[in-house]
Image (spheres, rainbow, N blue to C red):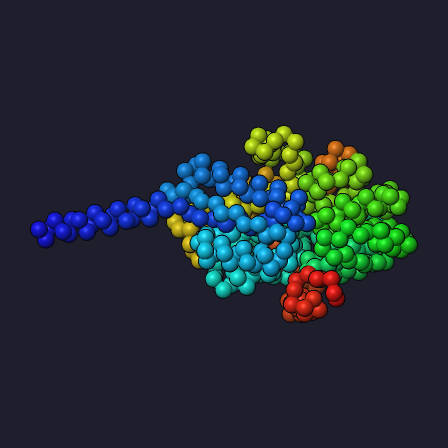
Length: 411
Protein backbone atom coordinates (compact mmCIF):
# COMPACT_ATOMS: atom_id res chain seq x y z
CA UNK A 1 0.00 0.00 0.00
CA UNK A 2 2.83 2.40 0.93
CA UNK A 3 4.55 1.68 -2.42
CA UNK A 4 1.25 2.33 -4.29
CA UNK A 5 0.78 5.68 -2.49
CA UNK A 6 4.32 6.74 -3.41
CA UNK A 7 3.69 5.82 -7.05
CA UNK A 8 0.48 7.88 -7.07
CA UNK A 9 2.33 10.89 -5.65
CA UNK A 10 5.02 10.61 -8.35
CA UNK A 11 2.39 10.30 -11.08
CA UNK A 12 0.55 13.35 -9.74
CA UNK A 13 3.77 15.39 -9.65
CA UNK A 14 4.59 14.37 -13.21
CA UNK A 15 1.08 15.25 -14.36
CA UNK A 16 1.39 18.66 -12.69
CA UNK A 17 4.71 19.22 -14.42
CA UNK A 18 3.19 18.37 -17.80
CA UNK A 19 0.27 20.74 -17.15
CA UNK A 20 2.77 23.48 -16.29
CA UNK A 21 4.63 22.91 -19.54
CA UNK A 22 1.39 23.18 -21.49
CA UNK A 23 0.21 26.36 -19.75
CA UNK A 24 0.28 29.24 -22.22
CA UNK A 25 2.96 31.90 -22.21
CA UNK A 26 0.95 35.08 -21.89
CA UNK A 27 2.28 38.16 -23.68
CA UNK A 28 0.96 41.71 -23.65
CA UNK A 29 0.76 44.10 -26.58
CA UNK A 30 0.18 47.74 -25.60
CA UNK A 31 -0.52 50.22 -28.41
CA UNK A 32 -3.06 52.92 -29.27
CA UNK A 33 -6.14 51.59 -31.05
CA UNK A 34 -8.02 54.86 -30.50
CA UNK A 35 -7.03 58.52 -30.33
CA UNK A 36 -4.60 60.76 -32.22
CA UNK A 37 -1.86 58.13 -32.62
CA UNK A 38 -4.02 55.28 -33.92
CA UNK A 39 -2.90 55.49 -37.56
CA UNK A 40 0.74 55.46 -36.44
CA UNK A 41 0.56 52.67 -33.86
CA UNK A 42 -1.92 50.26 -35.43
CA UNK A 43 0.56 49.12 -38.14
CA UNK A 44 3.14 48.30 -35.42
CA UNK A 45 0.50 46.28 -33.60
CA UNK A 46 -0.17 44.35 -36.82
CA UNK A 47 3.53 43.55 -37.34
CA UNK A 48 3.91 42.51 -33.69
CA UNK A 49 0.88 40.20 -33.89
CA UNK A 50 2.23 38.70 -37.12
CA UNK A 51 5.48 37.75 -35.38
CA UNK A 52 3.63 36.27 -32.39
CA UNK A 53 1.29 34.30 -34.65
CA UNK A 54 4.29 32.92 -36.54
CA UNK A 55 5.68 31.67 -33.23
CA UNK A 56 2.33 30.10 -32.42
CA UNK A 57 2.25 28.37 -35.84
CA UNK A 58 5.69 26.91 -35.08
CA UNK A 59 4.30 25.27 -31.94
CA UNK A 60 4.74 28.09 -29.45
CA UNK A 61 7.74 28.31 -27.14
CA UNK A 62 9.16 25.69 -24.78
CA UNK A 63 6.32 23.38 -25.76
CA UNK A 64 3.77 25.92 -24.56
CA UNK A 65 1.21 27.85 -26.63
CA UNK A 66 1.30 31.66 -26.74
CA UNK A 67 -1.68 33.65 -25.51
CA UNK A 68 -1.83 37.30 -26.64
CA UNK A 69 -3.47 40.05 -24.58
CA UNK A 70 -3.93 43.39 -26.39
CA UNK A 71 -4.55 46.64 -24.50
CA UNK A 72 -5.51 50.00 -26.00
CA UNK A 73 -3.32 52.86 -24.76
CA UNK A 74 -5.85 55.33 -26.22
CA UNK A 75 -3.00 57.73 -27.19
CA UNK A 76 -2.77 58.75 -23.49
CA UNK A 77 0.33 58.26 -21.30
CA UNK A 78 -1.76 57.73 -18.17
CA UNK A 79 -3.84 55.04 -19.86
CA UNK A 80 -0.66 53.36 -21.11
CA UNK A 81 0.59 53.18 -17.52
CA UNK A 82 -2.71 51.75 -16.31
CA UNK A 83 -2.71 49.25 -19.18
CA UNK A 84 0.82 48.10 -18.31
CA UNK A 85 -0.14 47.54 -14.67
CA UNK A 86 -3.22 45.56 -15.68
CA UNK A 87 -1.21 43.42 -18.07
CA UNK A 88 1.28 42.58 -15.33
CA UNK A 89 -1.01 42.16 -12.31
CA UNK A 90 -4.32 40.97 -13.79
CA UNK A 91 -3.40 39.33 -17.07
CA UNK A 92 -0.13 37.88 -15.73
CA UNK A 93 1.84 38.45 -18.93
CA UNK A 94 5.55 37.65 -19.07
CA UNK A 95 6.47 40.50 -21.44
CA UNK A 96 4.95 43.66 -22.90
CA UNK A 97 5.53 44.73 -26.50
CA UNK A 98 4.62 48.32 -27.19
CA UNK A 99 4.44 52.01 -26.24
CA UNK A 100 5.02 54.73 -28.82
CA UNK A 101 5.83 58.26 -27.68
CA UNK A 102 8.51 58.82 -25.08
CA UNK A 103 5.75 60.28 -22.91
CA UNK A 104 4.05 56.86 -22.85
CA UNK A 105 7.28 54.93 -22.33
CA UNK A 106 8.42 57.15 -19.47
CA UNK A 107 5.02 56.95 -17.80
CA UNK A 108 5.19 53.14 -17.99
CA UNK A 109 8.78 52.92 -16.65
CA UNK A 110 7.83 53.18 -12.93
CA UNK A 111 5.31 50.35 -13.41
CA UNK A 112 8.02 48.15 -14.94
CA UNK A 113 10.41 48.95 -12.09
CA UNK A 114 7.77 48.28 -9.44
CA UNK A 115 7.20 44.74 -10.73
CA UNK A 116 10.68 44.14 -12.20
CA UNK A 117 9.00 43.41 -15.52
CA UNK A 118 10.03 43.70 -19.17
CA UNK A 119 9.04 46.01 -22.04
CA UNK A 120 10.26 45.59 -25.63
CA UNK A 121 10.08 49.11 -27.09
CA UNK A 122 10.11 49.44 -30.91
CA UNK A 123 10.39 53.19 -31.53
CA UNK A 124 13.31 55.47 -32.34
CA UNK A 125 13.70 57.91 -29.46
CA UNK A 126 15.80 60.65 -27.86
CA UNK A 127 18.03 58.30 -25.87
CA UNK A 128 19.07 59.72 -22.47
CA UNK A 129 17.85 56.52 -20.81
CA UNK A 130 19.04 53.02 -19.90
CA UNK A 131 16.50 50.93 -18.05
CA UNK A 132 17.17 47.29 -17.13
CA UNK A 133 13.45 46.71 -17.71
CA UNK A 134 13.41 47.91 -21.34
CA UNK A 135 14.85 46.37 -24.51
CA UNK A 136 15.13 49.20 -27.03
CA UNK A 137 14.76 47.91 -30.60
CA UNK A 138 14.34 51.38 -32.13
CA UNK A 139 17.19 53.82 -32.79
CA UNK A 140 19.23 55.79 -30.28
CA UNK A 141 20.20 59.37 -31.30
CA UNK A 142 23.51 58.32 -32.87
CA UNK A 143 21.66 55.80 -35.07
CA UNK A 144 19.15 58.21 -36.61
CA UNK A 145 19.10 61.82 -35.47
CA UNK A 146 22.81 62.66 -35.39
CA UNK A 147 23.79 61.05 -38.73
CA UNK A 148 20.61 62.43 -40.32
CA UNK A 149 21.50 65.96 -39.22
CA UNK A 150 25.05 65.54 -40.54
CA UNK A 151 23.82 64.34 -43.94
CA UNK A 152 21.25 67.16 -44.12
CA UNK A 153 23.77 69.92 -43.41
CA UNK A 154 26.20 68.42 -45.94
CA UNK A 155 23.56 68.06 -48.65
CA UNK A 156 20.50 70.26 -48.04
CA UNK A 157 21.16 73.47 -46.07
CA UNK A 158 22.72 75.18 -43.06
CA UNK A 159 20.00 77.60 -41.89
CA UNK A 160 17.76 75.26 -39.93
CA UNK A 161 14.25 75.58 -38.49
CA UNK A 162 13.42 72.95 -35.82
CA UNK A 163 9.81 71.80 -35.35
CA UNK A 164 8.33 69.19 -33.06
CA UNK A 165 5.36 68.03 -31.02
CA UNK A 166 5.56 69.27 -27.45
CA UNK A 167 6.66 66.27 -25.43
CA UNK A 168 9.89 64.68 -24.23
CA UNK A 169 11.20 63.19 -27.48
CA UNK A 170 11.07 66.25 -29.78
CA UNK A 171 12.32 68.60 -27.06
CA UNK A 172 15.30 66.38 -26.28
CA UNK A 173 15.91 65.49 -29.94
CA UNK A 174 16.04 69.16 -30.90
CA UNK A 175 18.41 69.93 -28.03
CA UNK A 176 20.73 67.21 -29.34
CA UNK A 177 20.25 68.54 -32.88
CA UNK A 178 21.19 72.06 -31.75
CA UNK A 179 24.53 70.81 -30.44
CA UNK A 180 25.17 68.82 -33.61
CA UNK A 181 24.29 71.79 -35.81
CA UNK A 182 26.60 74.11 -33.87
CA UNK A 183 29.46 71.62 -34.20
CA UNK A 184 28.85 71.52 -37.98
CA UNK A 185 28.83 75.30 -38.29
CA UNK A 186 25.11 75.44 -39.11
CA UNK A 187 22.64 77.97 -37.66
CA UNK A 188 19.28 77.43 -35.94
CA UNK A 189 17.00 80.20 -37.23
CA UNK A 190 13.83 79.04 -35.46
CA UNK A 191 12.39 76.43 -33.10
CA UNK A 192 8.68 75.85 -32.49
CA UNK A 193 6.45 73.18 -30.89
CA UNK A 194 2.81 72.19 -31.21
CA UNK A 195 0.75 70.38 -28.60
CA UNK A 196 0.17 66.67 -29.17
CA UNK A 197 -2.90 66.24 -31.36
CA UNK A 198 -2.82 69.82 -32.69
CA UNK A 199 -3.68 70.47 -36.33
CA UNK A 200 -3.26 74.25 -36.02
CA UNK A 201 -0.15 74.66 -38.18
CA UNK A 202 -0.83 77.93 -40.04
CA UNK A 203 1.20 80.21 -37.75
CA UNK A 204 4.06 77.71 -37.54
CA UNK A 205 4.46 77.60 -41.32
CA UNK A 206 4.24 81.39 -41.50
CA UNK A 207 7.12 81.59 -39.00
CA UNK A 208 9.18 79.20 -41.13
CA UNK A 209 8.58 81.32 -44.22
CA UNK A 210 9.72 84.48 -42.40
CA UNK A 211 12.84 82.83 -40.92
CA UNK A 212 14.91 82.60 -44.12
CA UNK A 213 15.51 78.91 -43.32
CA UNK A 214 16.90 76.64 -46.02
CA UNK A 215 16.16 73.39 -44.12
CA UNK A 216 13.35 72.16 -41.85
CA UNK A 217 14.12 69.46 -39.25
CA UNK A 218 10.81 67.77 -38.41
CA UNK A 219 9.88 65.88 -35.22
CA UNK A 220 6.10 66.28 -35.32
CA UNK A 221 3.96 63.18 -34.69
CA UNK A 222 0.44 61.83 -35.12
CA UNK A 223 -2.30 63.82 -36.83
CA UNK A 224 -0.12 66.94 -36.72
CA UNK A 225 2.08 65.51 -39.50
CA UNK A 226 -0.40 65.61 -42.41
CA UNK A 227 -1.72 68.99 -41.26
CA UNK A 228 1.81 70.43 -41.24
CA UNK A 229 2.78 69.23 -44.71
CA UNK A 230 -0.52 70.31 -46.25
CA UNK A 231 -0.02 73.77 -44.76
CA UNK A 232 3.55 73.95 -46.06
CA UNK A 233 2.32 73.39 -49.60
CA UNK A 234 -0.63 75.75 -49.23
CA UNK A 235 1.78 78.51 -48.23
CA UNK A 236 4.11 77.70 -51.12
CA UNK A 237 6.87 75.92 -49.18
CA UNK A 238 8.14 73.10 -51.42
CA UNK A 239 11.16 70.75 -51.22
CA UNK A 240 12.84 72.85 -53.91
CA UNK A 241 12.55 76.00 -51.77
CA UNK A 242 12.99 74.59 -48.25
CA UNK A 243 13.48 70.81 -48.00
CA UNK A 244 12.35 68.95 -44.88
CA UNK A 245 14.31 66.22 -43.12
CA UNK A 246 11.92 64.17 -40.97
CA UNK A 247 12.75 61.80 -38.14
CA UNK A 248 9.11 60.84 -37.49
CA UNK A 249 7.66 60.50 -41.01
CA UNK A 250 7.59 56.98 -42.48
CA UNK A 251 5.78 54.95 -45.15
CA UNK A 252 2.57 54.56 -43.14
CA UNK A 253 2.40 58.29 -42.45
CA UNK A 254 2.59 58.89 -46.20
CA UNK A 255 -0.63 56.90 -46.54
CA UNK A 256 -2.39 59.74 -44.67
CA UNK A 257 -1.15 62.41 -47.12
CA UNK A 258 -0.99 62.66 -50.88
CA UNK A 259 2.62 61.49 -51.39
CA UNK A 260 2.93 63.71 -54.44
CA UNK A 261 2.80 66.66 -52.02
CA UNK A 262 5.85 65.32 -50.18
CA UNK A 263 7.92 63.96 -53.07
CA UNK A 264 11.40 65.42 -52.84
CA UNK A 265 11.52 65.72 -49.03
CA UNK A 266 13.64 63.38 -46.88
CA UNK A 267 13.58 61.10 -43.83
CA UNK A 268 16.23 59.26 -41.83
CA UNK A 269 15.46 55.76 -40.53
CA UNK A 270 17.13 52.38 -40.09
CA UNK A 271 14.77 50.66 -42.55
CA UNK A 272 12.83 51.52 -45.69
CA UNK A 273 10.43 49.19 -47.50
CA UNK A 274 12.40 49.67 -50.75
CA UNK A 275 15.46 47.93 -49.27
CA UNK A 276 16.34 45.42 -51.98
CA UNK A 277 17.35 42.22 -50.18
CA UNK A 278 15.87 38.70 -50.30
CA UNK A 279 15.03 38.85 -46.58
CA UNK A 280 13.13 42.11 -46.92
CA UNK A 281 11.31 41.09 -50.09
CA UNK A 282 10.06 37.94 -48.39
CA UNK A 283 8.98 39.87 -45.28
CA UNK A 284 7.01 42.45 -47.28
CA UNK A 285 5.40 39.65 -49.31
CA UNK A 286 4.31 37.78 -46.17
CA UNK A 287 3.00 40.91 -44.48
CA UNK A 288 0.89 41.80 -47.52
CA UNK A 289 -0.33 38.22 -47.86
CA UNK A 290 -1.64 38.46 -44.32
CA UNK A 291 -2.96 42.04 -44.23
CA UNK A 292 -3.59 43.06 -47.86
CA UNK A 293 -1.68 44.01 -50.99
CA UNK A 294 -2.24 47.72 -50.39
CA UNK A 295 -0.43 47.72 -47.04
CA UNK A 296 3.03 49.23 -46.59
CA UNK A 297 5.81 48.45 -44.12
CA UNK A 298 7.94 50.93 -42.19
CA UNK A 299 10.82 51.13 -39.73
CA UNK A 300 8.91 50.85 -36.46
CA UNK A 301 6.90 47.90 -37.73
CA UNK A 302 10.13 46.04 -38.52
CA UNK A 303 11.47 46.91 -35.05
CA UNK A 304 8.27 45.60 -33.48
CA UNK A 305 8.39 42.38 -35.50
CA UNK A 306 12.11 41.83 -34.81
CA UNK A 307 11.66 42.51 -31.09
CA UNK A 308 9.27 39.56 -30.82
CA UNK A 309 11.73 37.25 -32.61
CA UNK A 310 14.66 38.36 -30.43
CA UNK A 311 12.58 37.89 -27.26
CA UNK A 312 11.63 34.37 -28.43
CA UNK A 313 15.31 33.50 -28.93
CA UNK A 314 16.01 34.65 -25.37
CA UNK A 315 13.11 32.57 -23.99
CA UNK A 316 14.53 29.48 -25.67
CA UNK A 317 18.03 30.19 -24.39
CA UNK A 318 16.80 30.85 -20.83
CA UNK A 319 14.43 27.86 -21.03
CA UNK A 320 12.00 30.17 -19.26
CA UNK A 321 9.61 33.02 -20.08
CA UNK A 322 10.08 34.69 -16.67
CA UNK A 323 11.02 38.37 -17.17
CA UNK A 324 14.05 38.25 -14.85
CA UNK A 325 15.60 35.31 -16.70
CA UNK A 326 14.74 36.60 -20.18
CA UNK A 327 16.30 40.00 -19.39
CA UNK A 328 19.63 38.28 -18.85
CA UNK A 329 19.35 36.00 -21.87
CA UNK A 330 18.30 38.73 -24.32
CA UNK A 331 21.63 40.54 -24.07
CA UNK A 332 23.90 39.82 -27.04
CA UNK A 333 21.08 38.21 -29.06
CA UNK A 334 21.33 38.81 -32.82
CA UNK A 335 18.74 38.38 -35.57
CA UNK A 336 18.56 38.76 -39.35
CA UNK A 337 15.75 41.31 -39.56
CA UNK A 338 14.20 42.65 -42.78
CA UNK A 339 16.49 45.66 -42.32
CA UNK A 340 19.62 43.55 -41.91
CA UNK A 341 21.45 42.03 -38.96
CA UNK A 342 20.46 43.55 -35.61
CA UNK A 343 22.15 42.85 -32.29
CA UNK A 344 21.16 43.63 -28.69
CA UNK A 345 24.03 45.42 -26.97
CA UNK A 346 25.01 43.54 -23.81
CA UNK A 347 25.70 46.72 -21.87
CA UNK A 348 22.73 48.98 -22.56
CA UNK A 349 20.01 46.73 -24.10
CA UNK A 350 19.77 48.96 -27.18
CA UNK A 351 20.07 47.56 -30.70
CA UNK A 352 22.93 47.76 -33.18
CA UNK A 353 21.47 48.65 -36.59
CA UNK A 354 22.13 50.32 -39.96
CA UNK A 355 21.27 53.97 -40.61
CA UNK A 356 19.67 55.06 -43.90
CA UNK A 357 18.52 58.33 -45.51
CA UNK A 358 15.59 58.18 -47.94
CA UNK A 359 14.14 60.67 -50.43
CA UNK A 360 10.35 60.60 -50.71
CA UNK A 361 9.00 59.38 -54.04
CA UNK A 362 5.63 60.27 -55.57
CA UNK A 363 4.35 56.71 -54.97
CA UNK A 364 4.77 57.01 -51.19
CA UNK A 365 8.00 55.03 -50.99
CA UNK A 366 11.61 56.13 -50.43
CA UNK A 367 14.67 56.15 -52.63
CA UNK A 368 17.56 55.20 -50.32
CA UNK A 369 20.22 57.86 -50.98
CA UNK A 370 22.64 56.99 -48.17
CA UNK A 371 23.37 53.89 -46.06
CA UNK A 372 25.84 53.49 -43.20
CA UNK A 373 26.85 50.17 -44.75
CA UNK A 374 27.08 48.36 -41.40
CA UNK A 375 25.25 48.23 -38.05
CA UNK A 376 26.06 51.18 -35.77
CA UNK A 377 26.68 50.67 -32.05
CA UNK A 378 23.95 52.39 -29.98
CA UNK A 379 25.03 55.26 -27.72
CA UNK A 380 21.98 56.29 -25.67
CA UNK A 381 23.63 59.35 -24.08
CA UNK A 382 25.24 61.74 -26.60
CA UNK A 383 28.86 62.27 -25.62
CA UNK A 384 28.64 66.06 -26.04
CA UNK A 385 27.30 66.37 -22.47
CA UNK A 386 27.41 64.36 -19.25
CA UNK A 387 24.66 61.93 -18.31
CA UNK A 388 23.82 64.14 -15.33
CA UNK A 389 23.31 67.13 -17.66
CA UNK A 390 20.89 65.19 -19.85
CA UNK A 391 19.00 63.79 -16.86
CA UNK A 392 18.64 67.31 -15.44
CA UNK A 393 17.42 68.54 -18.83
CA UNK A 394 14.65 65.91 -18.87
CA UNK A 395 13.77 66.51 -15.24
CA UNK A 396 13.31 70.23 -15.95
CA UNK A 397 10.86 69.38 -18.74
CA UNK A 398 8.96 66.98 -16.50
CA UNK A 399 8.69 69.58 -13.74
CA UNK A 400 7.66 72.39 -16.08
CA UNK A 401 4.82 70.21 -17.40
CA UNK A 402 3.43 69.54 -13.94
CA UNK A 403 4.81 66.04 -13.47
CA UNK A 404 4.11 64.89 -17.02
CA UNK A 405 6.31 63.90 -19.96
CA UNK A 406 4.31 66.07 -22.35
CA UNK A 407 2.93 69.60 -22.40
CA UNK A 408 -0.71 69.35 -21.25
CA UNK A 409 -1.49 72.74 -22.76
CA UNK A 410 -1.34 75.05 -19.79
CA UNK A 411 2.41 75.69 -19.63
